[in-house]
Image 1: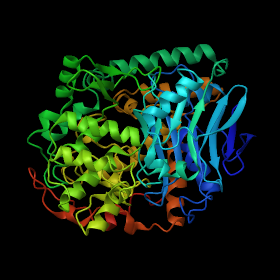
Image 2: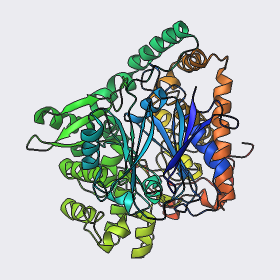
Image 3: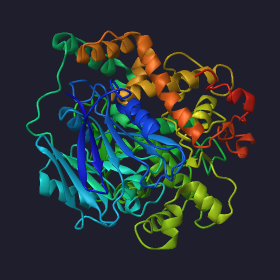
Length: 576
């Protein structure tokens, strides 16, 4: 029977709860957002004892379902001040599910200020002092925890940024090789974990039984069909395994939507130097790995192992958003310099997107020259130190812009915008503006349709059809995030009419239910109602559902502008 585990960090105690209404039948993002909505005051300070950190495996996580090992992490965001769900791969989610854990709720705040490590096994929960791990980066923390508790245990940890409660701090999860290349990166949830004085959570499912299946034969048939659907799609079955998410660099650059030099242009003349094709070429030359899964059972395998010029391991999970943020956005064209910053962000526990956007603001303010990789690396290395610059940049693009008196800050709800310019990809601009999460591409990935042609065609350069597209994909994404499935499975869902019914079949067979596709849509709508209403009660109005004014400038090469009116944008959540 699935249960909720509550960790009281003030008392260093725990309690198990039976799952009852209003949490029954929920997983992933549906669980994190519902619990935050029900139990956290929207007006509380995000770093106070009143906030809660929630972890939830998805509805299908732990069972043998291709690409279903994602975990949702939720809380009131220290960065945006609104509700937050951040999603990650790694080992932890599947292990929690096998131990019958539907959610972990981290509550309270210790008075002594001492960090703890919490270990969960089939035999119970233990609290340990984290004295020997305090001040360490995620790489060394995870290595030591594997040495202490055994290779292959699930680990969730924070680096120095989280310990310092910097508002762009991320939470990292050990991948199958014990590296911190998987992150709940956005929204500063690492700072929330740091405020709870939780350095790491270790989960060992050794000896735990498989997750129960209400109708096992029916489940196996649906799961087999699901894997075939994913492998047959040209994006999830071919492009992503071959070049990783960085395959998008050349594609989005060609579309004129690759933000360059702090969103001044839509094309970067040296995009090829940062492309997935170039990355794959270097990986092969240096003896790395061009494809690997971020969790067991991943069939898409868009992650990789990237080596430096000497053939030594440098980073993993080297993704499009990170490469863009620290590359084209800043005019840095050396992929090795970008990879080193990716490694340092994973180690310190810092959101790579927010760091890259912050770099652009630093360059905008004249602190670092445009394109200066070594200066950018030197600045990043200040984050784990007591240098005041580390405090400034670790609190993100909006904070840094305010400190420098810069007015060109590409952020919504204080969260830096990702790797698609909303003037050349108008659907994603609506997602940036209206998502309860702040500027977030994953909340409603209209790029799939507008640029990649999945699920039909919609012109990214004009307004027509994009409001409905963003709305529908935000609803669908909220539902997918609740299943534990990787968001990249959505490419197949958009193109294959058998995909969504297959997901419903797996959920029904897993739990003995009789859901329909309409029920999945209703789940996504319910998630968004929780999130939008939380933000409203936290003080957000439609005035926060706006892009910065500079997006009214023309964007080369298409010379398009952001031309949605406030009245049009405000239609997004009417009637939700």
